[in-house]
Image 1 (tube, rainbow, N blue to C red):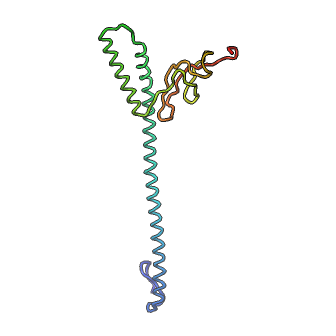
Image 2 (cartoon, rainbow, N blue to C red; image 1 turned 60 degrees about the horizontal axis):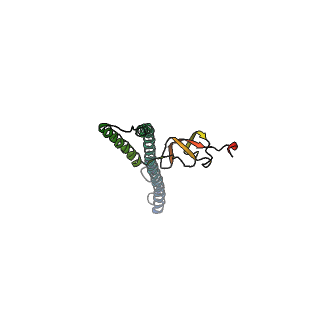
Image 3 (cartoon, one colour; image 1 turned 60 degrees about the vertical axis):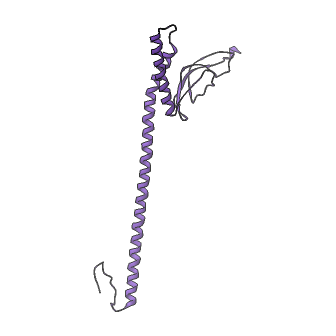
Length: 180
């Protein structure tokens, strides 16, 4: 009997063995197609899972990039607050003193926000110069201090976790040969 693809074809309708052979052959073909489809679905599911993970990674990376951009814009503001506080005049009126306390409060809140975001300032007078964290903008010679020690900090540095966001600008001790 000859038929379309949906029907089993075999030589002799009355031969059960021929019918069984053809049925088993058709079953193997169908099982093979099922296995191919299953593997395809598994691959598609794995690709989808990988895509979701990649989207999460990219989103996190973009958030980090945006945060660092905002932080880099915020650092000069924090610097200006520090400079303003550093140059507070002595003998001021009660009103000016109250105003100054408000400035201190705002500066403190800014520093607390940076701390919550995992950002720390660094660069202290007396620290040893580290080219990965500091930018030497000048050098002076002080024979009473160790070679390469930071004599003065012109601008504090900032880092988040271990990543340096802005190097500290420093003046370092450079003992010349003629001083020895």
